[in-house]
Image (cartoon, rainbow, N blue to C red; front, side):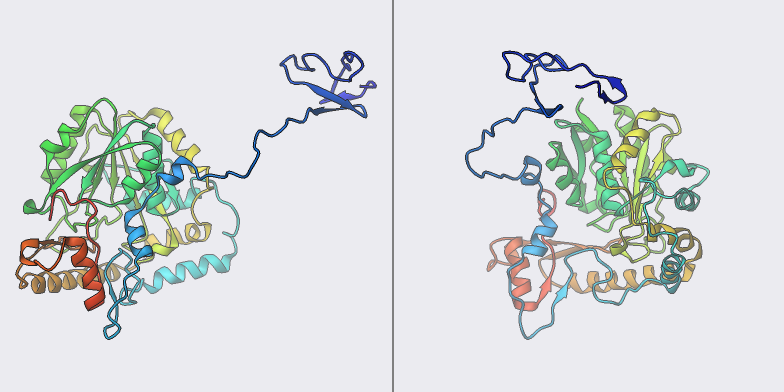
Length: 426
């Protein structure tokens, strides 16, 4: 190559074969042919095998379906034009404007923006100071946390995705509550992970059917998902029930994804213990965020709390979470900049007022629906949902609960969600 250097080392031009300028095995001896053009090396042009356009979506795209979003976004029903729409179909507390966040939360965001310190990229797992603020907020003697035990995410949904990804390979299975949050299945199925639904018992305020749950565990079970307080049931598990769940997980050595986005959103007289505070050996990845308790779901700030006091995860799971977080470079930096102030300066009055409002609404809904023959509401204990059983034999004009729900929109302009998994509660 005329004594020119490649990457700082002398390069020797291979002798052309048959005067063509093409070597037999190439410069690297790997069967790749190179052509000498003006003293440079270029890969030989490979003829495309495609004869026409044929661009197809990936299997992951085809396997992805979020049933709630599909229903809400794809609803073609026309509400009654004489009645204003009441949309009770999605867990967004901001829809009607009657559940605003606190002024202290808004001021924290304004201050973060005005500082101009948070306009660039943060580490993929989040700013250290912001992670420490979350650790301080949720740490307790039974389940201590440090900044390195916190990973900030783009909402609780991404936290759930990262946990499923770090635990599971295609062909594995996860245990998911039924009725339950549809995103678990959406994420798992798109990645080739099997979903096994364990039953919740409406007659026991939606406690887990522990015997049924345990019967689903096999050697490919990679994760048990526990949602407490519950979406969509509004239930809050008692301490004794949580301990029984942990006993099953410990017996079969299955780690837990604890979806605790509604942590502390429980009605007076009810206690909500975190799973990690009760666990002596089961490692737990707890997912939470600002969306519900602080009433800002659009700000997309979530987190994973790593509880692994017995070092069962070792360094591998932590490193896996870090690597997965690097795929999208983490959560919104402006919200991260406001996070410490939001956690430390939001007044207790705001939390109390929110809970009082939700409890009052749930009591109104429960009491009124209880008077309707054929409807069986289950009084919630927290979160922002209420489940209603429909005795279809009382409503012979409707084909099923889907028809009932759709007619509720067209006739009364009230938009509820019907459960996609109706094996438990009909």
